[in-house]
Image (cartoon, rainbow, N blue to C red):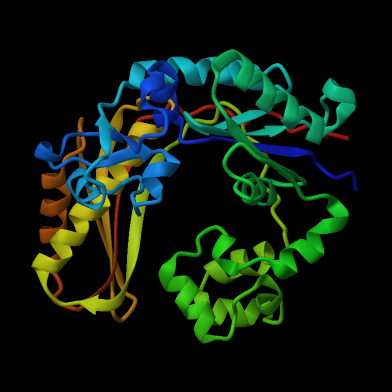
Length: 352
């Protein structure tokens, strides 16, 4: 079977980079984009100088300013970022009609059938990066491989302003050396659980059968089994509306206190707010929902129709669920459902 050619483009510190481009006096200074500390806001992004202080997206602005007193926090100018993103998306479409934006600052391209750059995905990725730099004075990192999983891992390999390629014949040795931290869905808790099983690399993980991984990780075991072998059959889906957005956290130790749980909901709310602001479009909300998984792995959910997201709604939903159960809490998730128009599935065609 002919291999697909997938490119993942990830802009470097997108919002902060635009602000520095538009105000060169900010160069060589720690920069972040987000809300004011006085409003209990969070950061959307920051440049690499700020990251050296331990600052990251989703961090409360007040905490970031304690870590770096010289941090310059600039207000979010979403209209400007969207305009730049639209011009960059137009560059992508010069190389392929199959473009899947993930946010304003990243996208997948399926260039399997493109004749640009003599059909070389590597040359196309380099040409796209060069064109973005020439037209927008911004840098982008790119990953190239045969599927979305590998392309996304590759795009982070030589950040910032880098390019990394995983060729078909390199997939097996590349995956065997790869830390399981790099796999999608492997957060701190899953990583610690894998380490407890003696798993640090994908080669370690490959010794486990699919059934073994299902026993340890449930449905996620199937994903781990395939990912550690570099397998990902997902197609690049252009113009498919996102139906939901959510964040969740599994606690290292079960939570017994409602107040502790509510403080975690506030942290999740901030993370969700950052992800919502980074979306290419501003979708209309359908409802907010919350998910709680208890220590015995039973699960409860609640939702409420809304027109705007609020922390109060998540707290109210949480209280309504806790009125029905007093068991220790293992996981909390918060999310949004969007209003989307249902569309017919397009007819699939072969790329080869």
